[in-house]
Length: 358
Image (cartoon, rainbow, N blue to C red; front, side, top):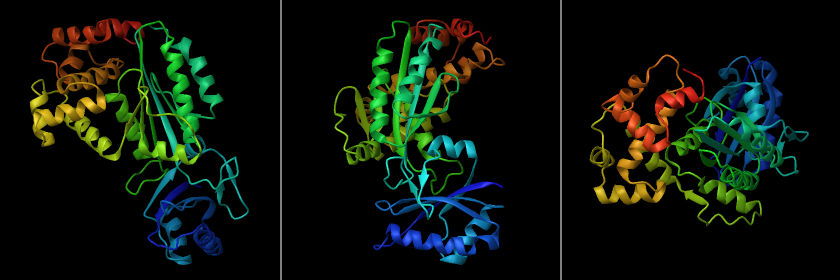
């Protein structure tokens, strides 16, 4: 039977775990009428959110259980696979009334810190790093979600463990002598968003954005991860050159920048003036904000995003280098090859040959 997960956002000053437990017991009393089985639920009293995991024939049946028992219907409900659920949230523990708990005994609030390691390997020896990298992740109790191309995404129950792991990864990568770059992003979020259709959709989208704007060797981290890490009693000093902390305003701004660049990806006339105008900022305002977040000037960031996107496109066997250059806003294959070589130290064709994907 399909597996579903929902989110409830409760607007009440008297919200408590005890109230949620009582509501869950009412769900159990009526669930069989709708062919639904409640499996586990997570409660975050600070954010007043509840996440419920259940099996059922469809979303409507799952929502009908809540409506019938106590009237607290879900703000959103999504279908999830067993693999997704176990990888992101872990099997974990639950008490006699199905309330999720961390392995350490505290109530599990359902939030996870997602770490994305974005590698840029131009030596062809990337596989030599993988063994040590995965060992560090396991040592810090992270669960690898996927390894597409040269990216690795990891889920952590503990924000502190995620930060510690990121710091150790930086040391590992900095001791790599070959032609190698990396970006590390850390974002904490909820398994179900009020508008999403996939598990941790907003969190994954946010952390992926960091791979397009992050500087080499810097750990990009959101404020939520810092706050949760502090609550866990962590004494990590994140106010160093090693970290770049972004707030919600920063993320919204950089999301808009990336969106505008991607929408104009093939437009060779899309430059800083066009972007600045679309952002509704003066040239100096845009420059200062972009420089503060990314360390790059406006035109430099535009070209950097296009070049990083071209790296993924070059892995496509059915598209030529020239086609990729034009589709990524370079007005000639020669200009694309020159900009690519200046940035990465080798030509697009050499990059293809390096990974034997031509």
